[in-house]
Amino acid sequence: MADTVFEASPDTMIDYDSSQQGDLRTEEMLINMGPQHPSTHGVLRVVLRTDGEMVLEAIPHIGYLHRCAEKIGEAVQPYQYVPYTDRMDYLAGMNNNQAFSLAIERLCGIEVPPRGETIRVAFAELNRIASHLVSLGTYGLDMGAFTPFLYCFREREMILDLFEAACGARLTYSYITPGGVHDDLPASWVERCLEFLDYFETKISDYNNLLSFNHIFVKRTSRVGVISIDDAIGYGLTGPCLRGSGIRWDLRKTAPYDGYENYDFDIPIAKPGGTDEIPEGVIVGDCWSRYWVRVLEMTESVKIIRQALGRLPNGDFIAPKMKNIKLPEDEVYVEVENPRGQLGFLVAGDKSAIPSRVKARGPSFCNLCITEKACKNVMLADVPAIIGSIDVVMGEVDR
Amino acid sequence: MTPEEVCQILKSEFGEAIEDALLEGAHPCAKVAAHRWGEVATFLRDDSRLRFNLLRSITAIDMLADDKLACVYDVMHIPTDAPAELVTTTIIFAVRIEVDRNAPSIPSVASLWPAADWHEREAFDMMGIDFPGHPDLRRILCCDDWVGYPLRKDYDFPLEYHGIPATTEFELTNPRH
Image (cartoon, chains in turn cyan, brown):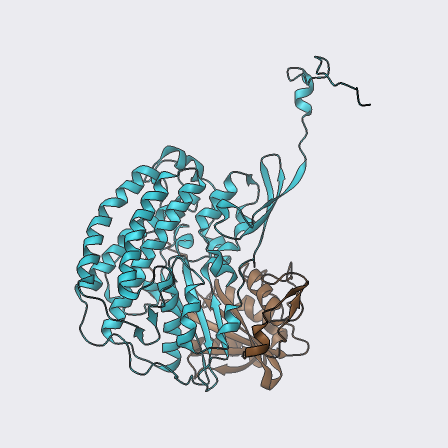
């Protein structure tokens, strides 16, 4: 056996030119994508049943980042729980703090001073821009465009600097807390922020030139992963994923909180290709539409921040005596518009200072459940495009 | 439409199945009998006055003192007739279902709202509530061989999992779980 030598001879080689071509058979194959995979945005595992290049079925498996956040909520006081909400959607810490704080305020009937409310709005919108910048950049990475990622992070870095100046943290802020915000703005912060907004507004066209209207990017994302309005609502999609299907729905308009009713801004939605500046070939509900809604939302957030800083009232920034508050025997469910959709907190009290139940309804968790439907009978290369366009943060999916 | 009016409509339609209308608190909801939940849910979604098409969340709550488990369903109406128009009002509502803690079972609504699929799996995983009619009821956040239901108030914190010891701090500090 040892001296058997295999040699390729012309008659053992496959003859691609003969009639055998029609007999090429493909087999079904199970491919495990993740939990460690660059384009699943965290520890998401998707099991793909493929036939050649076609994905017949994609089943997501989650829970790799489960940290018992809801159980911890039953062991600590509300102001101690705020840092845990930071670690849910870690790209939008401010918005998470805001949602939980609002739930506690509604439960206990706490009034936030006007200055605290206005600062909250400005920070929530700054965080929305920062979060969308990461979303844009990493989505470009998924599609093979490396450069826009660096540009997006350059601007995000400036927002993080602004956050650091105000609260000392760059990612997990715990700045917004029940009753208001835990510190006042430092000196000349408003001027620095306005300076950044002036700079940032000119940069959005850069992203569009680099990525949004890039021919390859449009080809990879348009007409892919189309989600109809009925599916989007049925599966509980919210935020840019829902507006990407063409519904003008935003909690900041329908159920305003923290005084959003006093601000003038638009809710961008997806439109078919050919209208406005949208490239031909785009249809409402596809991956490009969801991406585009995020780009447009950044401009709207800039508008809101300018208004908030322009009317910043003087006075207290937090309601007095916010520690050791007794929670009434009642429950409350509050939702806010996070960068990723509607983040809800259900908090139940039992006359002690510690809640008896804290439930977080993460928009990423709800948005992700459409994966199985959206990734049916698509090309293998479209799976990262679809998952990336939903823009999930696994910290919030698993909590 | 206010939650009171929704409760009125439900009461006139289902009578006994609506056990109570809990309207005083910060989270107004109707208490519905578990065995009629399938019909009530279909009505909530399809009735032309209500059309609650968005299931926002399902929260399982442990009521250890009453020996019961509760599920709170939060629903919302999103108008779809003119999607490009800005919506400034909405109807929100909630339904509370309480079941026996020893044999908790609530009919699944995953066929009505696909969003319920994962929420029900989470309630099953964390609280051990059974949802008959669910297409694929298995654990979602914990691993498949996990023992117990972590969010129950009487849950015993495991000190070991497949030979991996849990934190030794646990015995020292004994946190309230």
